[in-house]
Length: 190
Length: 286
Figure: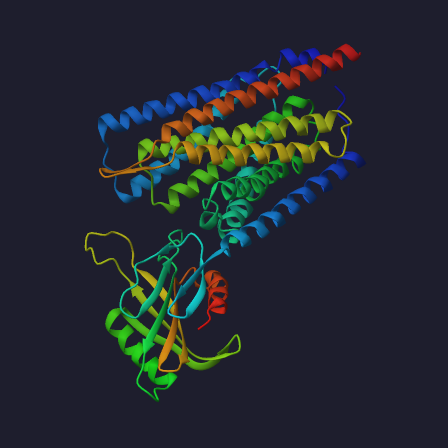
């Protein structure tokens, strides 16, 4: 059998293979984005949002309206929390941030505030509180290393209440999951 | 080299492929039975080392058969090992980071049937099959050692087993070791699947070099291998699905192994038949 050298036809075939692979990967990327960004409508107490599809939604408790968790995240499962906090008249966003800081400090292990500031989120005035804490399984026989979790709260003042949107993600996944959270944040109306 | 030589003297290539499948299934059975009977206790480090050792077994079995039987028309061992290493390198440097970190397939691929199939073909299938193709195409393919169509299958299998070895080591390391019984089944499934789909790419590579095929020939080969890859993963995930009941959860990894063995036999048989048919038609043409 003749052992022919790599020909011009081989070169074209080689380029065609690269092209078809690139096209498949681009199509795969678009498909991935459509699956990851697919959502289900959520509507409670005149607050509506587009919650991620396929995430686990926990039974709301206290002032929480929605708690949804991505069970497929590695380490700490990425979680969004939507709360409607009733407030006394004349309460400011920074006071709400202080309340949240105290509350997180009591509930979360090794809680530390990283930053807090006034921001504008998709045209709406908000107060941003970013922090970090450690999530450790309370079961002492559990062998997993505790996870470092980064959190971000957005506080929107809404008359006599504050709409608080929280984003919790494993430190390793935080930046990767932030884009999806911003879509959720953008979808919130009240 | 004559075509008849290629048909008759390279029978050991196919014998190696079939022996790999049978040996892996037997090896898995032996490890599973021993694990159940002896119930060995491991420390964290010995569990990890055992897992890494087991990850190397499928490739070692194939290479041993290959060395023992490839005497009449030997392929340079350095080339075979080199392509194996290149397949492993491409998997570790490009394939695994691209699939796991860039596409993050574990986050979305099992959302529903369509995403399992499309993600499995477009992302996992094309990435893996292209890298295995590249390991052969940009190393041994232009050389004079790649001197007959069957060489495509040999070298692509080596690349596929290199890729599978890295997938298995990555699985062991990321889990801090594996349960011997189910772990060895998973490793055999990955090795059989990667070797089988490589066989398809190898067949197309072999013909692309020795016959004036159309420009779409090689893209067709990669696409077919990627489709089989994606469909296999979907079928495996369906068949091995975890059953959850009040008494706990259970998964059946054996169905995955049976499926992988059937796919490996069918793919190898089909590629063997295609190569023989092709060589016969070349002979008849002369």
